[in-house]
Amino acid sequence: MLQIRQSFADKVAEINLYYKLLSDIITREAQLIFPNENDIRENFNVKVSSILKSSANLQLYNLVESTISNCLVEIHSSFTNESILYEDLSDEIQKLWVKFHYDYFKGTSNEKDILHNLKALIDTWVTNRLPVTLTYQEFTKYNTGGNFSGNLDSKEIIKLSEKYGIDFDIKCDEIGSIKSRRNKLAHGEVSFEELGRQDSIEYMKVLKDKVVDFLTQFIQAVDNYITNTKYRRIV
Image (tube, rainbow, N blue to C red; front, top):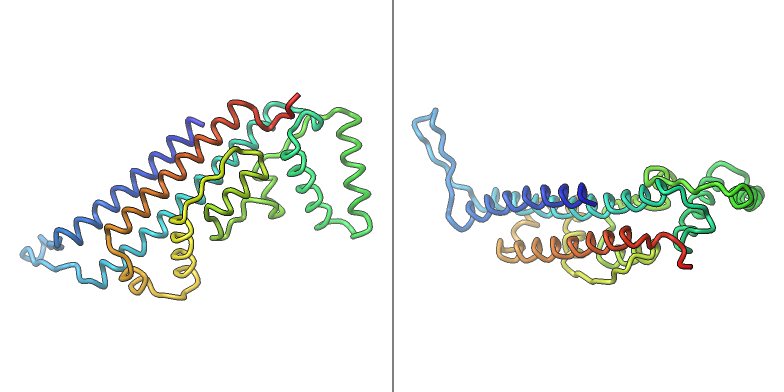
């Protein structure tokens, strides 16, 4: 988890730098100076400032998806690297493993063969006592998880936590707001200028701080999950 925490801290630091620049431009009425053109100065007009504010929403949503993905990668690596038998995995991880193979067979087998192939797979794993391996890259190959596509908010993150057995149920309306803004921009529903005009820099800072706090708590929950090997069956 050390690498995840460091990556998260680095990305938050980048975002904070951007927000400071944005705040300086807006509140201190910054100007552009062109030294090679006799120090000609130009003000940042409202249109430019609005576009820059909209871009901040994309940075925040990127932070959300990358943080959640990195945490799930770490979980999959943890139980895969421990070479745990199927019978020793938690119910949640067993279900994810079965779901992965079900989706695989669904995409590569005839419908009548799906259950047969799935049963044969499980029988082979249990009978031969083979350790379960399932990296996050493999898990997301058939869209069984991780293909967020701009749909992550605190409600979805809580659902993900339940699927893995992570003790986390914190709500954060601000992530829903960031998701909505990101999707409006991605789908062309509004222009960058239109969206940026809606929010003050003060409100944007509130959004940022709430999202960062939420993700910090999620990282801690995942750290506790891995440290206490909650992906193992409780004996």
